Every structure is written in C-alpha cells, then in structure tokens.
Length: 363
Image (cartoon, rainbow, N blue to C red; front, top):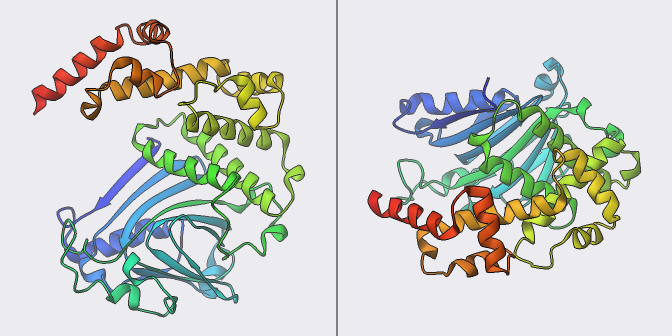
C-alpha cells in the first residue's frame, strides 16, 4: 500500500450532488461527527489523506462547514483518538465538552479529544470576526454572492487546514495533564510549536513523494513532536521517554539547519550551541538517526540540493553561479564546483545549461 492516498473532489470528478457526501465520508473515517454545510448542493473541496502507520494526516481545503460530535456518537465509539489541527487560512470556532467557545485563525493550533463531544464551525477569511461561532451561519452565507475563484463554488469563503489524528494511547503524556488543553487556542509562534507546524507543512509538501517504508517512521516522529510540544506546555518534559525526546531533538536540529543554510558560519559547533548540547552528543545523536551521516555532511548535502534547485530556476538564470552557492552558505566557488560535481556528476554550469535549455524547449 502506498504511504499516501490523494482524493480531490472537483466539479469534473463527481456530480454536484455527490461531492459533499464523498468528502464527508473521507472526513468521518477518523473524525466521526455530523457534518453539514450551506454549500452541500455544489460542494467544491480538496482533501489528501496521508497514512503514517497508525497516524493519519489530513490536508483539506473546503467551504464553510460545521462538525458536531454528540454524546451519542461518543458513547458508540470504540477507539479514543486525539485530533490536532493547524489552521492555514480561514477561521474556526470550537466548543469542546461543556467549555466556552474558542476562536482560531491562521497559524493557530488546537486539539480535540474524541471521548468528549465537540461543536466546530469553520468559516472563510471574509467572515472572521466577533460573533462568528457554532450556530452562526455567517461563515457559510457571506460568500454566496462571490463570483471570484477558479471554479463553481471556489469563490465561497474557504478553510484550509492540516489535521493529525492518532490513537490517544500513542501519546506518552498522561491524559489528566492534557485536560485543560483540549479545545483551547494553543501557542504556535515559538519553540516546539513552530517546529511542529513547520514539520507538518513540510510533510504535506512531500506527501506524494513518500514511500510506504517511510510512513511508520514519520508517524512516530509526528507523535514525538506532539508529545514534546505538549509536555513543554504542561511542564512534564522529564516524564517523556528518552527515545521520544531524542527523536524530537533530532528533528529540532534538522529544522534549525534548514533555516540557517544561508549562514557560512553554520557548523556542528554552532548547531550544538543553539540546542544547549555538546558537540560530541550532537554527533552521537546524528549518527543514530541519520544512517551514519555526519552533521557536516548533512549540512553540505542540503546546501547542494538547494543550489541544484536554484540553478534550474529560470527566474534566477542571470544570477552568477558563485552567488547561487553563496546564498546557501558556500562562499568558495572552487569548493562548490568540486562538491557539486562529486554529488551530481556534472559541473554547476553544465547542470544550469541543461535544465534551462529544457525549460526553453518546453515553452
């Protein structure tokens, strides 16, 4: 079985009367709830499901809708799942259990527990604001006069979100310590939350390239990052299993390197200092989780990959080769040429010429 299954619902794929039901069935595979929408009659949505072992990742873009999980649905369910959502655009209003309603916008994270009832209303960017929430139809109705968008229905206010669903038993954080976090707007602009958000967005971008052998490992990494994030929020980091902490740390190291590839001073020493660990521990950690590749080799490979991509970009055709290398932290033109040829079998200039001549021929 492939690691990823993509399902796109558009006007040309299904009759108008079948699109909403098809999309709703995909959602309900892991988020069992009553789903309604004012746009059900002509529903235009996209969804990608990424199966990562026992973890499911959902990437969806859809018109305003409402998701209600009743006490009755809770009682008839067998597995207890946690639902993590990262809002990319649009807005959401969530009432979890008997608590107050919380509002969420782009960049916000929130969690729901399938063992509690919830009421979630989603609405497009133009309908965000005070007063929107469960029971409010402003998010569904406000776009009805819009004629913009790439197709029928796509001019409606839309929501884009990434969701992660996984069995609660996988999370090595005691449920009672999470009680006050469910249904709340959780910090997403610093520390581990940024790492988690970046990882999920990057995973979604690479979804179609993932193979089945990678899926379970990535599912484990996702749960480890969620655990590291939640344990920091609850001050229970020392209670996490050592292996989970190591896996979260290596992902933090990789994310730091990717963000700083442009810096010529990015070295193992700088990476270790940024994470408050010794250089020797960093090398040990990398050796255990990167198939023996050293930190310096991983940095060099990532830099060469970025330069390889940029040299094939028509928008950068006038940028000298040595400046392409310098923008990814390789300041020596001779070192870059030598490393590039060793990695790809041709010189940077030859690669650029072949790539750009291919682009010109396709025009």
